[in-house]
Length: 406
Ligand SMILES: NC(=O)C1=CN([C@@H]2O[C@H](COP(=O)(O)OP(=O)(O)OC[C@H]3O[C@@H](n4cnc5c(N)ncnc54)[C@H](OP(=O)(O)O)[C@@H]3O)[C@@H](O)[C@H]2O)C=CC1
Ligand SMILES: O=C(O)CCC(=O)C(=O)O
Picture 1 (tube, protein in one colour):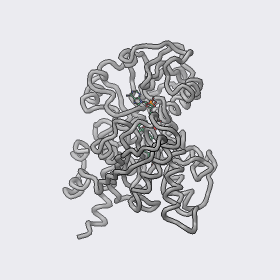
Picture 2 (cartoon, helix red, strand yellow):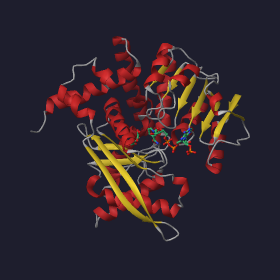
Picture 3 (tube, protein in one colour):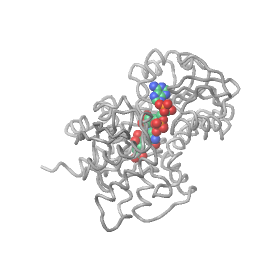
Picture 4 (tube, helix red, strand yellow):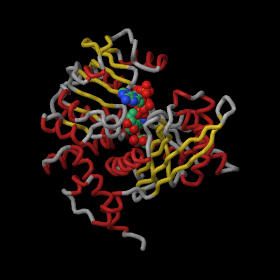
């Protein structure tokens, strides 16, 4: 962000405000396990900035969740929303836990108790959680239901928009589950048309085959591109003739990992990064592409499906080697854009057809992509610097217009 601000005239107080989150919430809460014993969990919710609208961002259930990680991810949400022009600010939250270690009943009690203890610190006009790593639409529905039961005694259907990423039957939006992948694919299509690359036959590798990784892979496959390698926590697989993305998604749903998939060969985790391809899509966790990995990559383009997958060192090497990066705040913004549509539909008691969701998503992603590339070309900077600059410029403008309450 500091690098981007060098290209802008940002007021000193706005720099200071953006450097820290506004609110940091930590809740410690006990949950009854299936064996009758109680276990204490620590939940975080970081509200980074709400100048452009209610705080917005996902909730992560993963063993590596820390306060520092959530703070960083919350700030990415602030700039992401500003870049794609959804009227939201930035937030993120999570619990340090491994969801796979708990039964469905335990997960429900953990999710409900977390929301109960967040109390009035979330709300449809104040702070709106969504899915992230280790959480899903069922967890979002439990969270919404808990909020409605504790906040609106008479009308159980008002305020459904307190959480997005819900199941369709409980107030979700068509297209939300594939939205992040769909947004990434719209970006890839823009890149391909700028560089005259045919996506048919284009080879790509994906790290992380959860919501973002699998949906991106399936949509690219539909465009004729070829998935040649996948990695998740269970291992890495490759197949030069192309792995079936939809077949692999079905296998992962059943086996909870890519290891053992019959339609590809197992390879070393290290060798995954050496695979010949045009596009590399990190869609798991932060800091996966460090300088050593960046030296090995044999792609033309890195599309950051995940938040923060490239370290500063990794990015420097990619730039040196002429590998273009579509940064997280641009590449994975499709999720929050369709979350915004879901929130709007909940407010208006509407249900949009998928065609409308996709068309509006495409329009917003392409507009933001164009603004990022125009800034990058005109100022001679990389895409991340450009995307951040476009976003910060917008936030700065609003601070200057509205001023600071004394
Ligand atoms: N869901 C959304 O709408 C959005 C998500 N994102 C970002 O996308 C990324 C992925 O999120 P999402 O798809 O929702 O999460 P999921 O939990 O659905 O999937 C995460 C995937 O990453 C794998 N993974 C986890 N750790 C590692 C590792 N160390 N090495 C390789 N693979 C690993 C997981 O495997 P396993 O399950 O076996 O652990 C799983 O396949 C995150 O950075 C998230 O913040 C960004 C925007 C929106
Ligand atoms: O859909 C949302 O509100 C937020 C998704 C998210 O957490 C992200 O974009 O990183």
